[in-house]
Each structure stands twice: as structure tokens, then as C-alpha cells.
Length: 458
Ligand SMILES: *Cc1c(COP(=O)(O)O)cnc(C)c1O
Image (cartoon, rainbow, N blue to C red; front, top):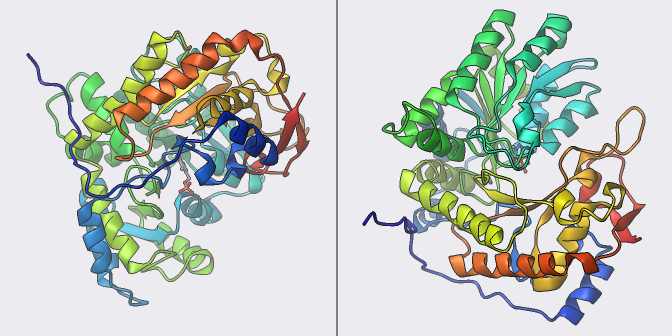
């Protein structure tokens, strides 16, 4: 018999978590204005709000923390990280930043100006935020299959080449500073991009002389899917695949809080020394001197080690296997979920789950609240709240998908926790017709509103 996967780690230290009562949760969620971001973490039993910065560092990463060099300039930790990035991605130049959106802020300060168009697969919310803040437009060129939650397609994060070519063709070159490819495509449900697609995007980009930037938060998970799903890559190592992926990019932004398994950190990496020089000025202004840019030496050390651990096959197999287990259990309860399962999260189709509640009442947020009330599980809305308002008309943007995302932190929860979550959601599914009302907005911020929005029951 083929042996199943098993975690490539064992547990050395534990953190206790506490269940609450339904009465407590009813009170807490109302005090939190029906925004799960406003809950205290101890009011949550299983926290699947995000996989960002919530992973468990290894003993080696903690050991690296002790070796951190906190020199202001030229710290050994900087060079350790530089070597790791170069070895894994092939990029010669890099700038540390305190997290992924800071990397976007610095890089986009150089590249993006008013009136620009930035095509790509579905942009992440902070990426889009940084583009729109500069009065430029993010153009979503994801393949249509990505918007059908029931359609099995191995690479739903792929870019539609016709859509991309249309953008490249119909705008002046000087208004297209870059193409952004997000790996895996978080907004489309943690869906991967194929190597074939990366190659074809590169061919078009070369033809139109537009640089490609990878938004790389989950590049290792993307590589794992390429290995499992794309012909010709089954016998290649994750590192070989990663290295080929990045060969099709000119620069990358990284949120190290994802696939590099650290709690905080990010970076920009690039091939072009001129771009590095220009971005350095902004890095110094916004983040810190170029050899630490918002990170402690110890954090750069842990990040370097995390890049190696995060690109190991056995780790990725158990990581993505655990996410798939959560998805399978939910399907057994009849819960409508996006397929194929994402690498870092299971996305519940709230439009189908709560089809009797109108989208104007924030179906996915309503479902997130119900799951919290049921079992103290915290997920996050990826729907109308996240989609925000149109920057010009200020009307709500209603996205095609209304999803509840349950993101699984790396190396944190056991499969019993996954069973608990699936059962809780199964219970909500059984009583879904008793949920009669959705939510309405009481208070919201002009940009990235979902973090601070205040809601109430309709
Ligand atoms: C998390 C994330 C970011 C932003 O990174 P932060 O570290 O949260 O600032 C950007 N792009 C993608 C795809 C992400 O998942």
C-alpha cells in the first residue's frame, strides 16, 4: 500500500487554546460590530482568519533568531538573506521590507503613476490598494474558469492571454509599467498559475517590452501544484521548479509571512541594478536602510531559514494535504466549496450556501459570523466588503464570487482541528434556512474598508 503523507515535523512546544460558549460568542461578536477583525484572539477557538504571519517557526528558525546580527549597516543577517533569496529565486538584488505591502509601496513608488494600467491575474487587495492609491487601474485578466467555483481546472490562477494582449494592445506602452502575476492567485481562491502560462505571459511581455513582477507570497505552494499537475514537472524538485518560475520574472514582491513561514517580513527582489538603485531611495524613506529595511537582523535570519524550509517537498505535501483534508470533510457535509481546493485555504461559496440572502446583505460576511457563532471558528470574507467601492463612482462593487475563506496557518493546527471546523460548518449548512437576514454597513473607511468596517444585522 502506498504510504500516506505525514507531517514533516513533530511538536516541541504547544500553546493552549480555549473553547467558549455560544452565549459568550453572541455577546462578543455584537461588541465587535460583526467584524471578525475586531475580535480579541482569545475570543476565537480556531483561527483561520489568515495564513499570514500565523505559521509556527521551526527550532532552526528560532535558533537563527539567536544568531541575528543587529548592525545598522552591512549585517551578516542581510547577507544570509541575500544568499537565500539569490539561491532560491535567482534574483541578484533585493531590498528587505517589513511586510509584503511595504514591498509593493516601495516598488510601486518607482513604477506606478497616475493613469497607468497594470494587468495581471486577480490582484491581491493591498496590491490593488497601492495601485488605486496612485490613481492607476488594476486590470483583472484571469481566465474565465476562475469565476466558476464548480469547474475543475488545474490552474485557475492562469492569465487569459487574449485579455492580457488586449490591455497591452489598447494602451500606450508608457502607461503599462508592469504585468503583475500573483502566485498562487489568492483572490481567485489560492489557485496556481501553470509554468506554461508563465512562459506565454513572458513571451507577450517581451513582445510589448513590459516587465513582469511576481507577487510571490505563495510561490512555493504554486511550485508544488506545478509538480503535481503539470506534465513534465513530476520529477523536478520544488527548488528547480521555483527557479524556472522566477526566470520568467523581472522582479518580485514578497510577503514572507506566507511561504517563508515567518511572523513578519517581506522583500523586493529584482534583476535590474537601476531599478534596485531607484527603489533603494524609497526603501530608505519608508522602511529603513537598504541592509535591514524594516526588519531586525534576527528576523532576516529566520526568514532566510524559512525560505529553505518552505520550499521542501515533504513540508509542502503535508501543508497542502491538510488544507485538502479540510475541503474534503466539508464536501462530505454537502458544503459548497471552490474546487480544486486552494493551496492555503478552503473557500466556501457563500452565494450558494446562503442563496436566499441577497448579495447586498453581504452573504459571505453573514456566513463568517454564523460559523463563528457555531464553533468559535474565525474565517474571513472575500466578497463584497473586500471588493470595496468603485474609486470613481463610490458604488459598491459586487464581485462574481462571494466567498468565505478558511485559511490554514502553517504547521499550527492538527487534522482534528480541521475535523472540528468542517463539522461546525456542516452544522451551519444544515440550519442554513433558519438564517433569515444578512448584514448592513454602519461605518466604513474610504479604502481597504473590510479591516475596520462596522456592521449590524439587517
Ligand atoms: C499577503 C499578501 C500580500 C501583502 O503582504 P503583507 O505581508 O500582508 O503586507 C500581497 N500579495 C499577496 C498575494 C498576499 O497574499
